[in-house]
Length: 310
Image 1 (spheres, rainbow, N blue to C red):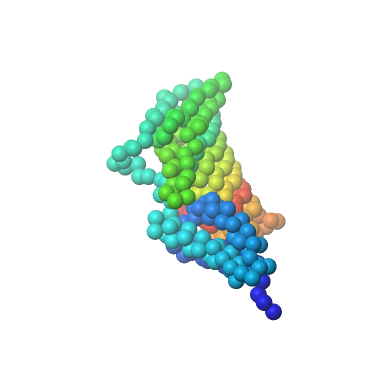
Image 2: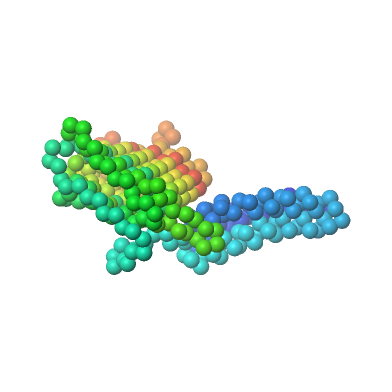
């Protein structure tokens, strides 16, 4: 009985996906390899077209070009990503000579504000967030065409900061990343904080350990995400909605954790870190008695999610 070309095609696809996952888990590839694979989705259409053209002709053997083309696509994407060590759309801030424009935005301390909201909506890039003990907000934004639009509103004793950019960056299959929306942000450490971050594919380093974080909502595509929480707030609500990502959440050892996750195709270390599953979510043994607690809701695609203590 002859082997069906379609069976070989789907076998190549499943084998390729499995090998990419394995390479990611061992650190040979970055999660951003999925972006390049998704950008090449027309190859699948071409492969199926070749199969349909030749499978009922005298040149039936040419239908083997279909799985061969898919196999070469996986090999090409993996080799390019390995050689470039990921997409490198992030940059070092120390001693950096900016090739793009840099916009500096800052707000002085206002003592009549007792609550702060920060809403950030930007394109792909590298984002670092940390604390400031003397100013309300400080941000340096690298951009290519249009500088970010920054606005500060105050309603009685509540302040709200909006950061938005139309400079969405770009991506080329053959030249790699052209992301140019890097940002370094410092936020007041003396005010309760509600924060919303909506970015495209990004590398995020959020050091919130010195901030009084009440809520953080993070919406991003494929990314490398590192979030460090502190114990200055008695309760933190953290919501993460992401695509294929590497997510690391670092929390104080004394913090109680409750994690509700929709991550069927992701790997986690929840059990290894002592979290027990209870009624559909994971929680730490000290969740009910801890002075500071984090309620974490994660909705992520194919990802690697880790919890760590300090």
